Image 1 (cartoon, rainbow, N blue to C red):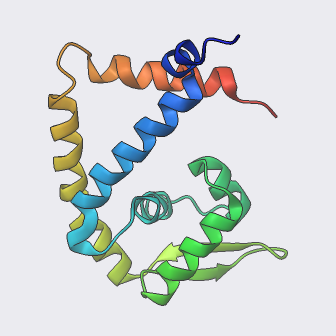
Image 2 (image 1 turned 180 degrees about the horizontal axis):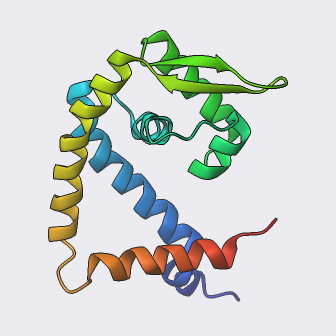
Length: 144
């Protein structure tokens, strides 16, 4: 018989999903005062950082399913935080509106506080070591 307890203790996917859900809740609680969800914050940040790339490329860059990205872009557009920009061909790109820039600027200190709180709670694990381990897992699991 398979040792299910050992699988539960060692499975990278299970631990990553559990960690992602808990981290998402922590960051979303921090961003709640400005009305942003974590994926929306990431999208605004990428667009604000000048990621004038196609929706498909933006989804890949952010590790989002394209349908999830499109759904969030729609909300961000409806809120007046981004606007589409015509691009060559059929692709759309987006840019921040002035209110989008303002919401991003209001969200950044909230994110920084959540980030600092989490880093402080890591105890014996250095933040850069935790990030390196997560990057190594992403690289190991990445298939194309």
